[in-house]
Image (tube, rainbow, N blue to C red; front, side):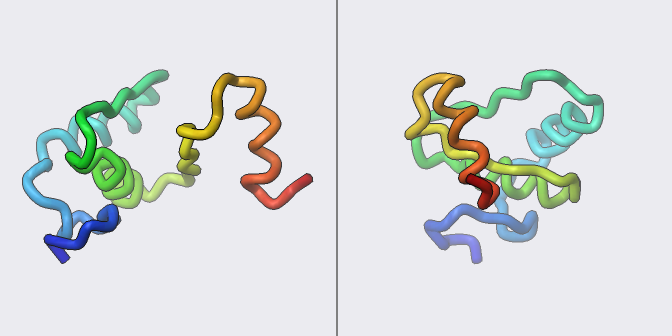
Length: 85
């Protein structure tokens, strides 16, 4: 659905970003150590990453770091993300 406000996960629902998707997926396949996806709010960054990772069919985990300030908190938060205490 093209005009749904929720993040997209299927390529057929994602519009006009094929060149960027190919570049991103190539970087993931090459094992690039750092891939940055940035832009102003509401341009489709989350949809972009969702679609690319689903196309690649690689195992992955998405972590929303807006509430995590620093590596210490991230380290201690990871077990709860996976249901472990």
